[in-house]
Image 1 (cartoon, rainbow, N blue to C red):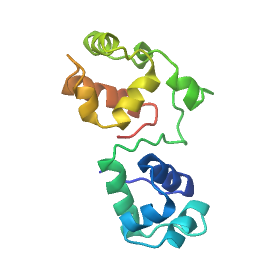
Image 2: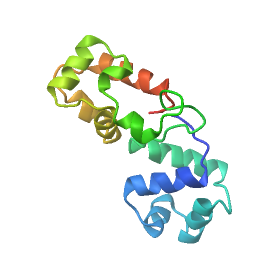
Image 3: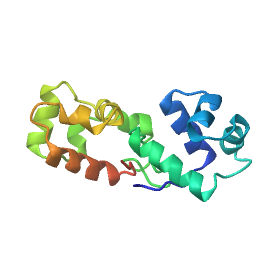
Length: 147
């Protein structure tokens, strides 16, 4: 399990990724809406046990949050610019690239969106197997993305 530093921005991004209101998110975590609000405004930090719970929820829901301390790709490139790059720029094997191309996945953002929906979604792409998935995750990790 990847343990994140749960900043206000990251807590909010996870909640939004799940499509939940603060109240619904609080209920899922077994806390109060006010506490979620305090985390999202930075008034308070989640406790150690809560950070573990948040990390588990993030992992189980394929939450992808780029590490802002690292560059996502080329120096000075924004996340949106990175998402628009061709998949071939990730440096994947020819087999992985061909499988993604045949599935119509030509931009990094398309692959990120599919991966965010769960590894099984990418594994459902014909000829894109576990080795290709691990290669993809490795290339993305080099750019600050953690799965």
